[in-house]
Image 1 (cartoon, one colour):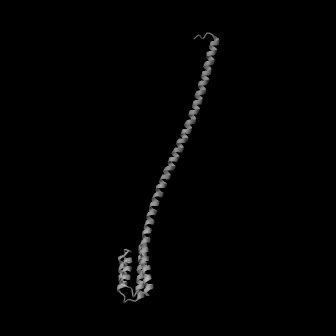
Image 2: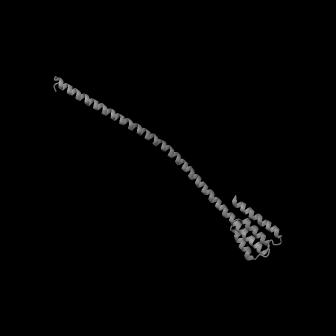
Image 3: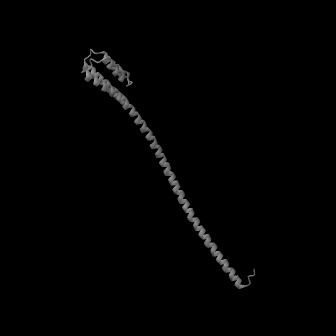
Length: 164
């Protein structure tokens, strides 16, 4: 190319100048877009890290609550078991009070009534309670009130023992 012609030189200069301006404007625009995307990525990364920390905290809270729930379920099951044990004593008490009302005391019970009461006492699983019921049946020579007090003490001890 011959640069001796001033008009051609001007045209080349103007074209070169326009291309340089377009190049710098394009590079500036692309740089600005890159800068915005890099900042958005950093912000997104920071939010992701913050959410990861929150999720980890929530997960540990969830695990704690899960363990507490299991412990509470175990406590409820234990209390249900204790309540069921106490109900066996109240079943014996209900049966005996019905017989006391029927016979006006601890006398005049039939062998079948005693055996039914003894079976109920055996459902408690407490051999000393069953022994006390046997004693009350076998010692009719002892005053009725004394036997009643011993029976009530055995019931109370049994219920308290089942709730401990």
